[in-house]
Length: 388
Image (cartoon, rainbow, N blue to C red; front, top):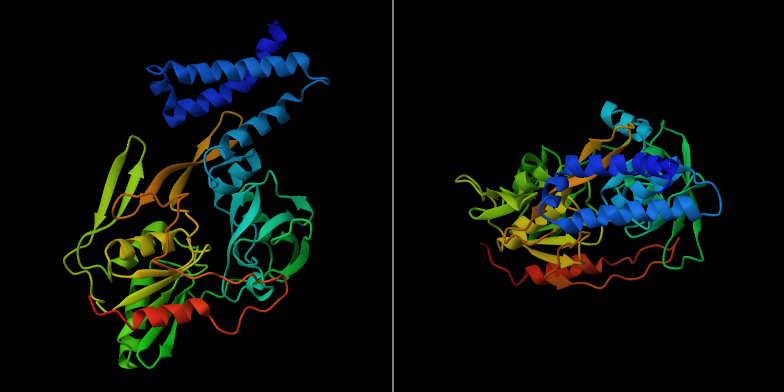
C-alpha cells in the first residue's frame, strides 16, 4: 500500500473508528476478533477502490456514501447527517412555521407514514404507504427522513412539489401542496352509535391523559358504555406520552419496557390509582399507526384491556440521539427501543391486529369508500365484549 493510499485509508477510517468508540463497540471488539476483521476488510476495500477505480476518487464524496450506507444498514430511523443538518438539529430550529402534515420514514425512498388529519397532504389524498421519489425535484433516494421533513417545512402559503408513487412505480404522480400552520387539534370525539363512544387521536402529547379523561367522561354522559379509539395514521408524539396515556386504562401490570444496549431493561408498570376507565375498548390500527400510538396500543393489548382491529402497524418505537463526528457531520443513532409488556419488540416488527381487516386499494385521485369497513368491524366486535 502506497503512502498516499494509506493516508486516504486513514482519512476515511477515522470517523468509522470514532463512531465505533462512541457507540461502545470497540470495547467489545477487544474480545471479539471478528469485529476487527470487518474493519480490516473495510480497509482492504478502500485500498482496492483507490488503486483500481478508473478515475481519481473523490474521497469526501466516497466517505459520505460509506457513512450513509452504514446508517442505512442499522434501521430506517438511524441516519448519517451532513454538517449543515447537524447544525440545524443542534440549534433546534425549524425550517419554517408551516408544513404539509406528512410524517416520514425511509424505505429505499422516503415513505409516508401518515398524513395528519385536515392537513394539505390529507386533503390531497396522500396516504400511509405512499412513496415520495422527489421533493421539489430533489431525489429522495439518499435523503434521510430528517432532511426530508425539513424540506417539507417552510413559510405559510409557500408551495412544495412532491413526486409520489402508489402501487405502480412506472406511474408517478406530481402533487403540489401549499404549506399551512398545523391546526393544533390533538383529539376529537363523538358517539358512533347509541352506546359506543368514538375517540380519534391525531397526536399524542403530555395533555393526552387529561384529554382522554375529558372525552370519555363526556361520552359516558351521552350514553356510551363501550369505546372505539382510532389510532389509524397516528404517528406523532413522544413515546413516553403514549405510555402515560395507557395508565388511564390499565389497572395493574406492566405497561411497557424500555430496552437499551447491553439488554438493560427499564420496566414501566401501572400504579395504584391507574385504570380509571374499565369499559370495553377496541383500538383501530393500520400501517400508519406508529411511535407513541404503538406503545399505547401495546400497553392496552398486552394487558387484555383492548383488542386491535385493522392492519399490522408500522413498527417504529425507538429513540435516537445525535453522535457528532470530528468533521462536524454526525449520526442520528437509535440507542433505545420500546418493547411490549411481554418484552416482545415493536420497533421494525410492529403489532399484529387481533382482528385483521383487509383494506381496499384506492387509486390515486379516487375517493375512499363511503363505508368505513374497519370501524364497522370494530363495532360488531365490541358488541360481544364485557367491561374489564
